[in-house]
Image (cartoon, rainbow, N blue to C red; front, side, top):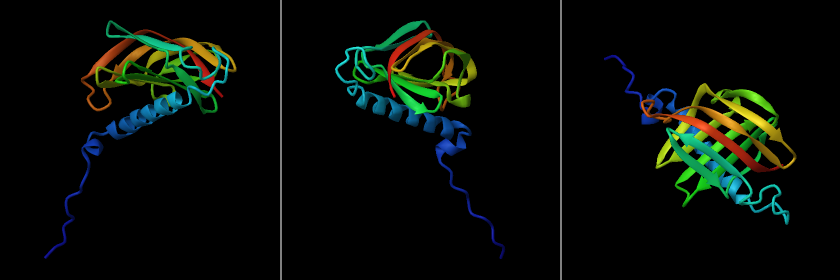
Length: 176
């Protein structure tokens, strides 16, 4: 009688290759949006100050359809050199998160280096593909960041569902 190893159990996500890391990134991004919005009212009495709801926006065009996330857009320091921005539209069924450098300049948009874009519209999640886009931070102050972005996005678990983001812009209060 020989001992044979039994079948290895794997989840559907782990069988999908790189999908687990991407799925975790999206869950993390959604948690960041929730945290951002939970702290949105912490900006004091300054009507345009950091964390003030209604004073920022993130807009983008996904496959020809314009999406405007305004009123709830806010940001915070994710880690040294990186800001996490987020906004929810409507009843919360559509959201966007954008991790941007905490410095003026232009660079690649994608999951490498932490600079990333996650979108959920119409119940379909998308994330930026590796360095398949560009982000330009045009201004950074103690309590605000603004810039532009564009690039390719893909469904995190089905790479046949893709999209093209154009005309992306952000002007968001930041809590530091």
